[in-house]
Length: 394
Image 1: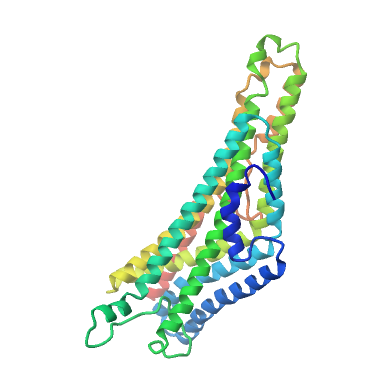
Image 2: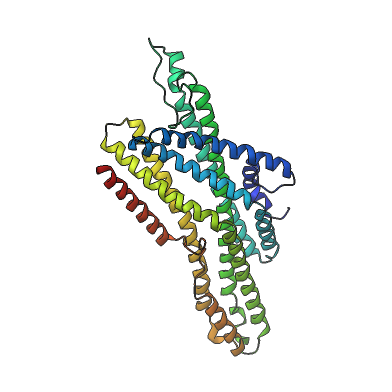
C-alpha cells in the first residue's frame, strides 16, 4: 500500500509486524508468531494463577498476585482478539489511503498531514517511554546479582522474582531461568499494549483529522467572495454542500469501521481493567497500612497510575470523537445560511438535523467512552475497592 501519507504509519506497521498482527502476505510466519507469543503470554499468566490456587488462605498474597495476573490476562486477551480482527486492518488502511487521495485543497492536505504527524509523534513517544521503562525494570532485577560480583558480602544478597509465581521449582536455584522467562513475558506484554494501542490511537487521530476537514468544508459552503451573487447562483453552493456532506460521511464511515472492529475486544478489556484497577488500589492500601518496603510502595503507586492513565486516555479519545463531531454542528450553524438561495437553505437544514446529535463511539452498545464514562469507571473501581476493604476488615 503506497500513498502520500504512508510514511506516517511505518512505525505502526513495524510494531504490529514484530508481534504478528500486521496482515502481510507471509501468512504462515504470522501464524507462527501468533502461536509463539500467545504461548509466552499464557505461560507467564498461568504460574501466577497457579500461585493463587496454592495460597487459598492467604488473602494478602492473593491480592498481590491478582495485581499482576489481571493485567497479564488483559494483555493476553488484547493480543488474541486483535489477531482475530487483524484482517480488518487492511480495510482500515485502504480507507485511510482513499481519504488522503480524495483531498485536493492545500489547506485540507495540511490538516491531514498535521494530524498524521501527531499520530506518529504519539507512537514514537509512547514507544520510547515503554522501552525505557522496560530497560529500567529489567536492570533493577539484576542489581543484587551485579553487586554480589562488584561488592561481594559474606552471603549472597536477597533477590526477588518480578512477580509472585509458582513453577514447582526451587526459586533460588533456578532464579535466573525463571526471571528470564518473566522478563520475556513482560517484554512481549509491553510490545502488545504498545503496538495495539498506538495503532488504535493513530486510527482515532486520523478520524479527528477527517472531522476537522469536514468542519472546514462546512464553513466554506457559503463562499463570502461571492456575496454579491448569493441570490443568483446555486450550483457552487450545491457542490460545496455535496463535498462537505461526503467528507462527514467518510469520517463517520471510518469511525464505524474502527468501532465495529474493536468494540467487542474493548468491552472485555473494560471489565478486566476495572477489576484490575480495584485490586491495584487495594494493594496500594495494603502497602501503605503495613510496614512494607519503599520498593513495594513505588511498584504499587506505578501500577495504580498506569491503570488510571490508560483508563483516562481511552475515554479521552472517545470524548474527542464527540467534540469533533459537535464542532461540525457548530460550524454549519454559524454560516450565513440565510443569505443563500431557498433550495440551499433547505439542504443546509437537513445537514443541521443530521449533525445535531453528536457521534459517539460506543462499545458493544453498552458503554460510550467519554470523560463522563471515565468518571463512571473510576467510581466503579473505587466502589469495588471499598468492598475489598470491608471484606478485609471482616
